[in-house]
Every structure is written in C-alpha cells, then in structure tokens.
Length: 385
Image (cartoon, rainbow, N blue to C red):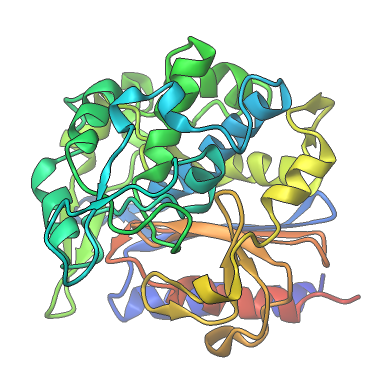
C-alpha cells in the first residue's frame, strides 16, 4: 500500500468534520492481514470536547447482521439447520402468514410458499422493517414496535405473526427484520440464548472483547454520543453516552442491529472472513461457506437492492452486499467487494481481489454512504499491485 496516498484519508475525513457533517470517525485499513492505517479524527462527545479514540465504542447497528449470519451458517455446517428448512418448524408463530400486496385488501392473499432459512439470510422472506417506506405494511410494522429493547425475541415473533408479509416469500429483495428472526431461530435451534451464542462461538474465539449487546459499567467512559444531522444541517445528540439505552443489557437481542463494538474488534471479524473462516488458529466456518455467503444470491429481477437509494451494480449474499457490476456512485469499487453498514453511518468493506479490509466508523444519522466512499477512494488508489 502506498502510505502517501493513505495519508489523504485524514484530510478527507477532516473535511466532513469541519463542515459539521459528522462528529468524528475512526478509520482502519488492513491488507494481507496486516493493519496499514488506523487513526481517529474529531470528537466522540462534542459537548465534552472529547477526542475520538481508536478504541471508542460505537453502536454498529446493522453491521450486527453479518455476525448473525455467520452464526446461522455455523448451525448449517453442523447439520442442525438447512438452508431450505421451513422456519415455522422452530418458529410456529410465523406459520401461514397473510401477504398484503399493493392495491389489494390486507390479508386477502395467503402465503404461497414457506419462509426458508435461505430467504432470511438473503432478505427475500417477505418481511419489511417499517423504517424505510410508507406502505400499508410498513405502517403496521412501525406501530408494532417489534424490536423494543424491553421486549424479547419470543414476544417479537408473536407480534410479527399477527402482521402480513409485504411480498410473497422468495419474490423480492426487501431490507427487513429477517435477521432478527434469524437470531431467534439460532436461539431456538441451539438451545442457547442468542447473545451467549454469539459470545461463545464468535466473539471469544476472535478475541472481540469489546463487542456486546450492551456496554458494561467499566467501559462506559469509552462510549460515543450518537448524533442526528438535522434538516438545518446541525448535529444533534439523539443518544447521549451517559444515559444511553446500550448501558443496560437488553431483553431483546437484536441480530439485525443491536451490537456495540470497536474498529479493532470488527477488524478481527473481517480478517476471519478474508482468511476464509479462520483467525489466529480458530476456525469458525469452512472456506466454501464463506465463499457462498459472500456471493450474490439475487436474480437480476431482484436487483438493484434499494437502501438509501437504488444501489446499481450491487446484489446481496448471506448478510452482505456484493458488488456484481459497475457502481455508478463509486466507480472505483472492484467486482466481488462485499460488506455492509449501520444506521449511524458505520461501514466496512472487503475486497477478495486485493485481500483488503476497510472500516469507517462514525455515529451520525441518517445513514449515508458519503464517508465510506470518500475513504474508500483513497484506499483503492493506495493499492500498489
């Protein structure tokens, strides 16, 4: 990697900070398994005038999904689950749901086929979130508070079973609560509480000691404030570190968005993936499983995926976006790059072609790709071979 090109990352991130678009950020880059860039910029608590640090704890939100997907594939490898399995075998609350199609009365259409484990992994099960649209089903999801931290995964399933699907299983890609359902599935199939499963099977082997569904008291001083960039272009605190909901262990462990982590912890997870399922002598998955997970699973009719706008040239695997063609908004992005992000504009990306990992973490809503793309441009320019 060309260190003189990587040196441009700092000024690029600082421009975002100076313009008030993010409070601060941590950027970490690794090539061939070795860290080549790791710096923090700006502030993680603006009111306290406190600098972002490399070990600042951040809410990674939907960057939880890849970890949940890895956990599910562990059970598949062990023969406890199959991708074609009907999930209602373990989650009977979700058997025989109704489907509300646009322009049709709610509940008129029966579910045509079972929801499978594969569809949960690919976000093609027919569920939605309620955050990203204003359809009839989205509004129902929004009112149901499916992911309340004071609820449980079992209670989530009961609520979800009373709601219609937004599309027939297997017919559309729709970003959704599917990975939270996957977390419940893991819990019921394994017989281990979901947070303990992740801790024992993923976080401990990868030495991800700062990754959890809540921040224990001895680490609370490292947690960043979370911000919203409002309509006037000002950063407003929406989840203050001192009173954050993540200071308390939740009752509902969200496999779709509940984790808190650090750049260094998440890098270990990514390096396990680049090493095809193994890190520091600990094998989590077989190489062919990682390759399957990070290969596009969507038909051309299901693409482009639509999240924060239509992402032309991007498909989806098992918990990861996958680049399948030219990406107009980021033409430097190589084929087969995979990754994902989180609601507070956290990002990671992995290029198998370059054996490269990039992580950019901030705490700014709403989600945008701006920071990722600006950092990524210099990362790829720095590749020498």
